[in-house]
Amino acid sequence: MPRSIELLGRHPGFKGVSVDRGATGPEPGTDAPYIIMCHFLFDSPEDFLAAYMPHATTLQEDIPNYTDIQPLIQFSDVLLSRTREADTNHYQTQANAFRSLFNEKK
Image 1 (cartoon, rainbow, N blue to C red):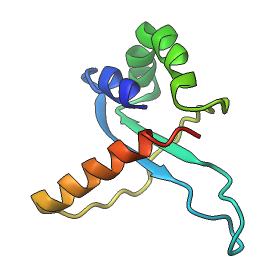
Image 2 (image 1 turned 135 degrees about the horizontal axis):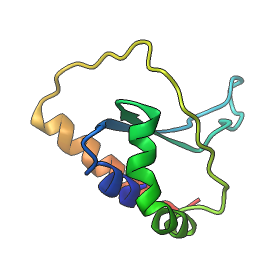
Image 3 (image 1 turned 180 degrees about the vertical axis):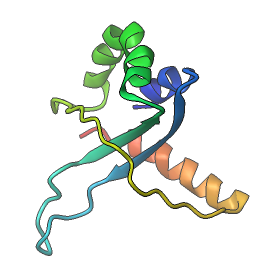
Image 4 (image 1 turned 135 degrees about the vertical axis):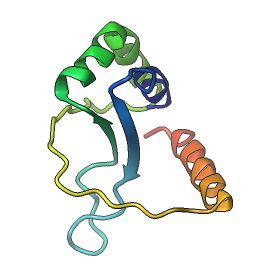
């Protein structure tokens, strides 16, 4: 994911990205249905494809560096998104958590 964020983030239609790790399934102690999800926010599916397609081979070859699970791609319409301002320490904590996330190959 770090490589995809780097490459896709250069496209002018790129608006943002979030990455989350599944913590648990619906019942306590059960596995989450998804281990990691990366949500890219683009102006349109066409902008995503314009950003992705020139790097498709590179990104597909990078996947085994992080997982042996076949990735899924889904296009969605964002109906609601809310964030709040965070201080610099919060951003640093997030960056450190993100780095450690990718050091744990599943």
